[in-house]
Image 1 (cartoon, rainbow, N blue to C red):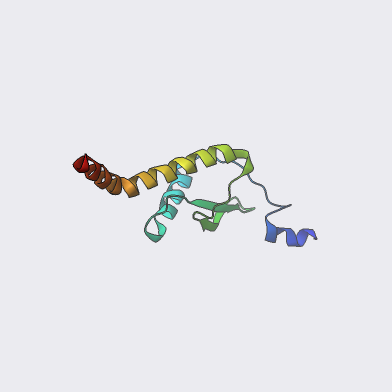
Image 2 (image 1 turned 120 degrees about the vertical axis):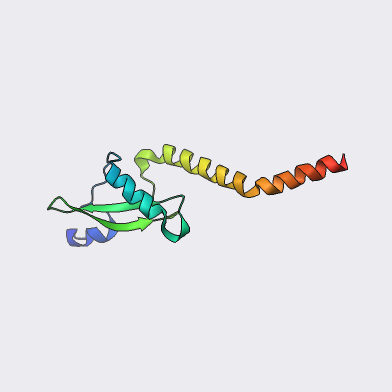
Length: 105
């Protein structure tokens, strides 16, 4: 493939870089996380333009790609999120089961 086509694949000419979480970036993530009634997982792809400005390329939900440089931390955070959400979702069911077991004992 020639260099002109590389932008379509996020390879070659792109640069992934960690940025400090400034109030500006935090605000963008907070606003993006409020979309569709609220998102637990959200990533925002920003493009830095030659004039120094930044534009949002896309907002991702659970289809966010994980950078290999941080994969272990990302997996740990994701596992904790899923466990917490499952615990919250099934809390009432567990309570009913505990009451039922106590009554039959």
